[in-house]
Amino acid sequence: MSSALPEFPADFRWGVSTAAYQIEGAVTEDGRGRSVWDTFTHTPGHVRDGQTGDTACDHYHRWPEDIALLADLGVGGYRFSIAWPRIQPDGSGPANPKGLDFYDRLVDALLAAGVTPLPTLFHWDLPQALEDTGGWLNRDTAHRFAEYAAVTADRLSDRVPAWITLNEPFVHTVYGYALGIHAPGRTLMLDALPTAHHQLLGHGLAATALRDRGLEVMIANNLTPVHPAGDDPADVAAATAYDTLHNRLFTDPLLLGRYPDLAALGLPADPPYVHDGDLAAIAAPLDALGVNYYHPTRVAAADPGGGLPFTLPPIEGVPTTAFGWPVVPEGLDELLTGLRDRYGAALPPITITENGCSVADTVDGDGRVRDTARIDYLDGHLRALHRAMAAGVEVRGYFIWSLLDNFEWAEGYHQRFGLVHVDYATQRRTPKDSYHWLRAALGRRG
Image 1 (cartoon, one colour):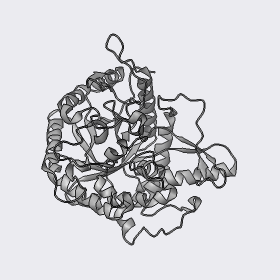
Image 2 (cartoon, one colour):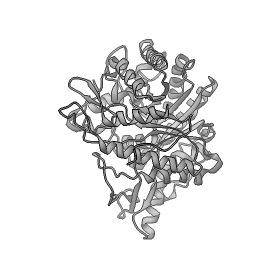
Image 3 (cartoon, helix red, strand yellow):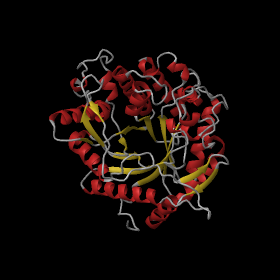
Image 4 (cartoon, helix red, strand yellow):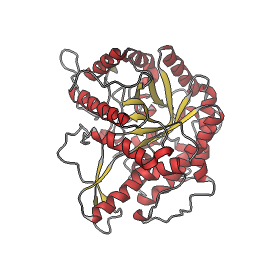
């Protein structure tokens, strides 16, 4: 590993990312409503060791300390999510003033610290009241989302120029509605696909509301390079089906105004939940495409009758993170150049909105967290990113997941992704070696 990063453009934005339910805590304070994650985590058997986000990192009370960490780190951007249940406790109707006040204070403090806020409107914490009426299976939720976007932007748009609508609609569809691994815990398999369309429709309607207020619009998609497990035509067909589900289903409508051919998934070309005008709304112009990258995916054909036409065998011969995910930095280069080749002139500028890894971090006796594996991970991925940019892919920023160790969904507090270690018993923050490495690298850039 070299001690210095490659040269990035002077206006390249460096940042870190978090999400509301994973760090805020204070789930019953100041009028916040119940979210699907509150319900899910308090249902036995859903989260490892029965852990919840009730307190998380207590960011709701400790945000001044966390902003000081951002300022000291030297990043220019902070991607955070706004908790819909804080703004509209039941998912609709007038805004909760105290909820808006919290984000108002947060934005002012970020700007005072020289950090540009980049809010995400939906990072999976749907108000439970909307889930009770069908959640994202219900087309009306897309319209409620657009109203929430408008209410929130009306309060913050004078200081926040760019917004992300959704985070990882693929993950929310598959983990939340198809497999039941995440909230709301439904197990609908391919019958969950209306939630994909309704999220994308919600994005499009919200994008129009944001643009009407003179704001820039992004969406953050989790994308992955897909490789067949072998040369067998069945494996190649399975990889095509998986690429369609994971990547193209959530990107083609945004950039091309149409859905890909879903025949490989056994689905009709014209699903009944897609109405006239929907695709035009979804394809509202994007100022940037947010890309969350963690690893590529290896795909093999499934046995007949298994419900899905593919399986996901492990990628062998590479290091893995504490989560067991393969570490393949060159996959980021492949992903970005692949997007350029697939979408051409339709591809807007890209921002890497998430990239990072879980490491089994501990605080040593001298107070240090020696997360060398994370430094190696970030260094390798930044070099891959630089290669993609040198090949002509327009990338404007890179946001690390995450600033803080946090509540990692179904894994509870067992996976640590942060540049800053959090002792959950005391809420003590300890910057890790990776934090100091990035701080030094950014400092050398001035």
